[in-house]
Image 1 (cartoon, rainbow, N blue to C red):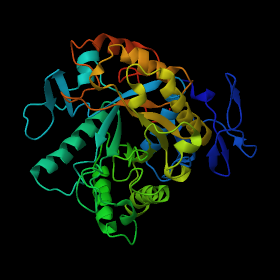
Image 2: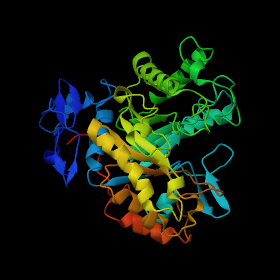
Image 3: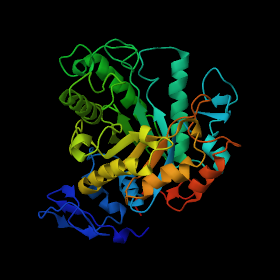
Image 4: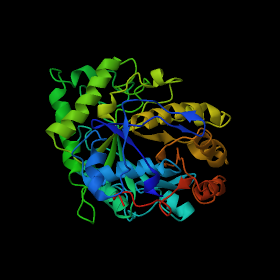
Length: 409
């Protein structure tokens, strides 16, 4: 990709896109924006960092943001949750890198088994590091997550972490139905769970600082806390807190990790579920541009068999348009068709929803595979050939075709 063709605008160190017209589509106009030369060398990294939530982010983290922005102009990266953590070998058999199982390779991957290559993006979860339990099993979970993250980075992949955080008030589950106790208003300063919350954030921060690649660099992580807040299933979700309380919690999370704990290798992502049809609805729980590097959406319901790809695509366009207008990354942060009952889902549902609105999504991530609920096919599955056709489409990038993302060249 020719970086000389990429141009961003900047005004008084506040970065935004300047007005233009491309393919008949109007972008947001801001007459105060002054166009500048594109970033082309590492000496321009300080300029890139002014775009980020963390102005003191590592060079590799800033480079990741910039390169993902460029990739999204013409392509989309493919990602898979827990790709080297767990998977399936058939409709009734599975494997997992967990303490109770032996002889599972950390390089095993369902995506690689079927396509011959790894995904470009690897999804992980802080769930077992902060769930108020102790013991060797949880120590193993932290250790294997670190190993898999480092290995993904060493092979050029991208790591993103979500956080299915147990309720810090009840110390129960993250689903509201399992532990229906209000917590969002209690994690903030003055609340009963503020110290508990800060201790959990310190676990996240301390762990992030142990992610060191073979090159000796801190590994960048796209951190996506408190997702799907527009649904009611999590304790931080709709009906269990006000929008203002949610926003305050998200902002506090970012500030505490960045300012108090000194995490320098995070890009911050925010992603509601599918419950919006306008930008105003989409932004109901938005923490603000100063706190978010990547805007996304999770969408499973609109991606089911028999639903027109246009329905999801119209929502994806809202996300992509906001990112383009505000110099953010955008992504389809979770999606999939459980057990792939539509055998041409990848090319006829997913690919069509991503292609028909001139989107600029950096990546799409499918959920983790287990024998009861899998999202990428195993060898011999009726959808395997369609998955290969999806992989071979020039628009989609797996690990074998993705460019280097941790340096600006």
